[in-house]
Length: 59
Image 1 (cartoon, rainbow, N blue to C red):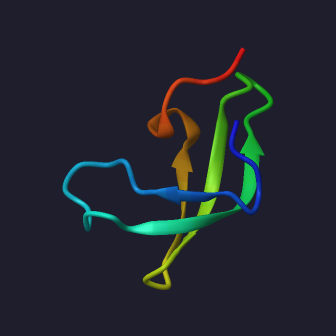
Image 2: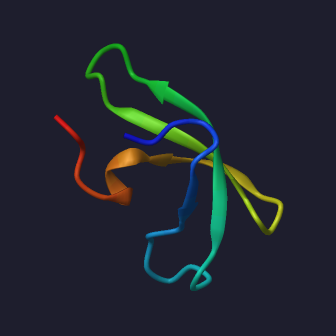
């Protein structure tokens, strides 16, 4: 599970290769418990990204 302060690489195809960022917040949808992370990318952008894009979820 990702947590604030973790460093991540953008896993999406077609984005700048090697783009890194820091998780600044983790949001949980109360209806389905899916998590979204807010990432501050090294290029100055911040955005919400579904946690499942970063790999399988822990049980």
